[in-house]
Length: 415
Image: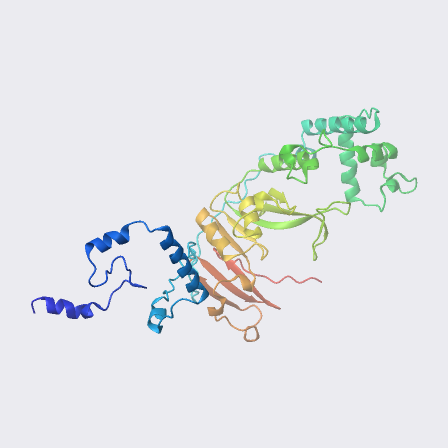
C-alpha cells in the first residue's frame, strides 16, 4: 500500500497521541484565533509596572486558593509523571557469581616437593641463637640501658654486652626451671649454682628493672602508630633471623600462638583453649619441620593487616610474602574463606583448611548428608571450579576446604 497523507494521520491517531508530555497550553506558542502579528509583538514587549503588580497579585491569589477554579481535566494535566531515580552508584559486584557445587571427584594437582633443604653443618645452640641476636644487638641494648639509668637516677650503671648476655641466659634458665619468685633462685637451700655464679641477686634485679632497647622515653614520629615501639628492635632482630632461613616450595602452616605475658600491657589478651591463654597474640607461618619463617604480633588497628576480605585472609597474605610460589598453605577455620582460596590460586599457591559452615557460599544448595546418616570416618565431597569441600564425620562433623588433596586422616587417642 503506498504511503499517503491519510495513512500518516491515521498512524498518529489524528495528532492526539505523542511521546512528549505537555502539561499546559503555552500561550506564547498557541496564539488565540484572530490575533495578528502586531499583537504578538506587543506581547513580546516588556510589561509595565502596573502589569507586573497585577500579575504578582494574580499569582498570590492562585496560591491562596482565591484564583479561578480549575476543571478536573486541567488538574490532571498538571500532574507530572514521576521519573525513576537514577542511581549513580553501581550495585553490580564483579567476580561474585553464583557458585555451583557438584558431587564429583576432585582431580588433585601434583605436589612433589623435595622437602626443606638441610643445612650443610649442624650448628651449636649458641650459634643458632647468634643468628637472631648478634653482637651489635647486645651492644645497643647495653648502651640504651646505661642511658636510661643515667637519665632517671643521674648515676652510672656501667653495664656491657657481656653482662646483658648473662642476663639473657639467666632468663632462659628460669624459663626451663621455674620458681614462683625469682629471688628463690638465690636462696641457700634451693639455689641454682649456674645462676648464682653468673650474677648476684641485686645486680640481676637492677638490670632487669632498667633494661631498654631504645634510647628515648618518648615515641618518635615514625613510630606514632606502633604501640610496640619500645621493643621494636627485638622484633626486628628476630625477623631478620627468620629471613635467613632458606625457603623452598613445600608445605607451610599459618596459625596463631600466644606469647605468655601476665604483666601490665593493654595488648594482653585472653584466648581460651590455649596452653598459655594469657599473653600477646602472635600470627606465625612455619615450615612443615616447625621452623618459623615470619610472624606478626596482633595489636588491634594495624594498617598492614587491613584487607577487603577480612582479618583472617589479611594475615595469610601478610605472612606468605616470602613463601615461594607453588607451595601449599595450611590454616584453620579462623582464616579460611572461599574467596581466600580463590585469591591464593590466582597468586600461585594452594590452600587447605577447615572452614565454618556459615562461610560456605550457596551452602543451601550443597545437599550434603545429614550427620545422623553418616558413619564415623565417612566423608561427603562437593567440588566447585578449583575448590573442593569435604565433610568428614568424627565425633562431630568437620568441614574442610582445599585446593589440593587431603592427607590420610588418622584419629589420635590419648591414654
